[in-house]
Image (cartoon, rainbow, N blue to C red; front, side, top):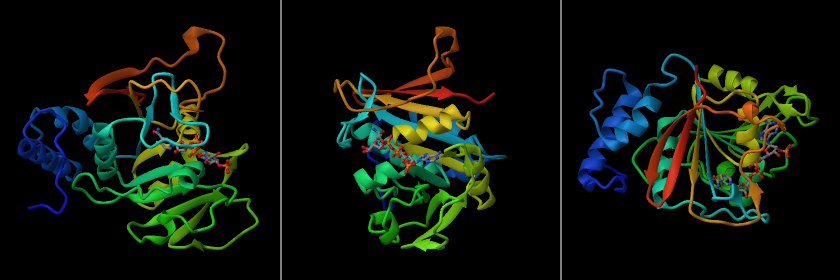
Length: 264
Ligand SMILES: NC(=O)c1ccc[n+]([C@@H]2O[C@H](COP(=O)([O-])OP(=O)(O)OC[C@H]3O[C@@H](n4cnc5c(N)ncnc54)[C@H](OP(=O)(O)O)[C@@H]3O)[C@@H](O)[C@H]2O)c1
């Protein structure tokens, strides 16, 4: 009996889905572990193998049909359904670190741990260049997983910890912290496989910098008509300058997840 059992979402019997997830976790650890054909293996197999010999970054956002990830007041629980939430926890279990921006921590006070399936918690990485967080949020106090706080290297405060989190200064590139530099600094700490879990600003900065290998957008059959935007990139005036990556599509309950592949 495993400590955390997997919820069934694939339409296969729960025991078969559990076994498939165990095989995915084994494959994450070893390229020699076999992956048989199943819906879980189709989705997660390429992600297990990606980044085995280098760094790998995948973004994920859940958005409404009209491209919103939260209300204007910051309410986002939940845009997508339980299958996408389980998917998010599975993605956490497959990476070394999960990254979110400061607004997400302020609004959601997330744990960023693996709770809906079996798997180890990733290191939690919070991007807060201006030191807006005060250390009272759960990622700084619950001790559930190691936590890093990325701040601007030119900031005035030079302390080394905020709660349980180690503070890591990152050089700016213009007003923002350079996502490539973030990847390099995390790789130096052994964090090679990264999940950028939100919000829209954080994922957009990685995408705009060309620092995402894959991007997963889960679209829920929901129209908000207002709210915080999903992706925001520099304006284009010509449609041919839009990004048109290779994609894979998966049904997650009532939602559709489209995974964009930006790798060469
Ligand atoms: N539906 C979903 O999938 C989903 C997922 C996560 C969160 N959310 C929701 O989304 C909302 C928050 O999203 P958001 O887009 O407003 O904000 P966010 O991405 O959570 O945080 C953005 C902030 O993080 C800092 N930051 C991130 N990347 C940076 C970089 N490369 N360089 C410098 N600073 C960087 C900046 O802080 P400063 O402003 O201090 O410079 C930036 O304004 C919340 O309501 C949350 O509930 C939804």
